[in-house]
Amino acid sequence: MKRRILLVDDDLAVLLTLKAVLELHGFDVETASSSAEAFARIESGVYHMVISDLRMETEESGLEVIRAARKQSYSPATAILTAFPPPGDQPVGKPIEGQPDSMLVKPLGTADLVRQLEALLIRHADQQQLRRNGSAHAHERRRSAG
Image: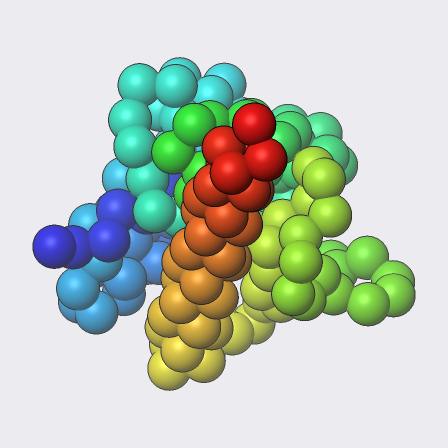
């Protein structure tokens, strides 16, 4: 099964180039060229990952896209793609509410991009499994106690 990615960027050249690169590496990629278009796609589709440029209509448009993605029941992995990373540590490990799972800093070579996305998808799947196992164990403990 191909992993579905929603790629969001207001720069058409970047959007089409990244789409082609990711499809060559076996991903099923849908695109959106604005946050409004991204919101519609996030609501109507199911994605394994949502990647958004940080600065589009506003300096925080990308974070708004990430927040919308993180509210979905299908819980996609999320990443911000930017040439302007905020100062400080990049998100790693347990995601902070409303923040992306990963920060991808441009320029980024093809091999590095694919490697980082693969690692993010694996890490995200592991975290989801841990949450499911934790929920199942908590439910079992409540049933045993009752």
